[in-house]
Image (cartoon, rainbow, N blue to C red; front, side, top):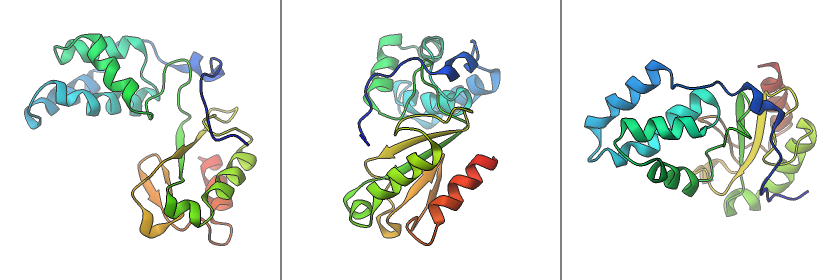
Amino acid sequence: MSHHHGTREVSPHAAHVPPGPLPADIREQIVALLPRYPSKQAVTLPALHLAQDRLRCVPPWAVREIADILDLSPAEVHDTLSFYGFFRPASDPLGKKRLWICRSLACALRGADQILDQAAHKLGVEVGGTTADGAITLELAECLGACEGAPACMVDDEHIHHIDQDGKMDRLVEDLRKG
């Protein structure tokens, strides 16, 4: 199974991406970040995360709105979005849950590639794909910063360590399927 994912077709889940504008509470959270950063441009990354966490992707209209809030050009916001590999376009939104499996050296030495293949098989998706029901997106991460718990994964923002132990990944996938 290939761990590389390039350009993919439009996901059937793209139809579930809400239209703009950004919800008022997201706009308010972005504005509330402004005093905590040295410049408006520095708020770009957290603003993109706020949008994706709610929308499960960052559609072009959200890029334009974030640019407007931060007094930046849409191109500046898009540059930040495209630099990082974890933002998803509207054509390929995240599932309700995002399962990242780390393949850093520490995790790879402890079987991360086999665990990734096992998870892909169990979910019925390729790496980078989302289950047919839109529930789970499986991705690999180059490093999750959890080497002490290798092999590790994350579900959304929660680290899970030692996923090679007695059926732990199988149980995790079953729990994610149940919601």
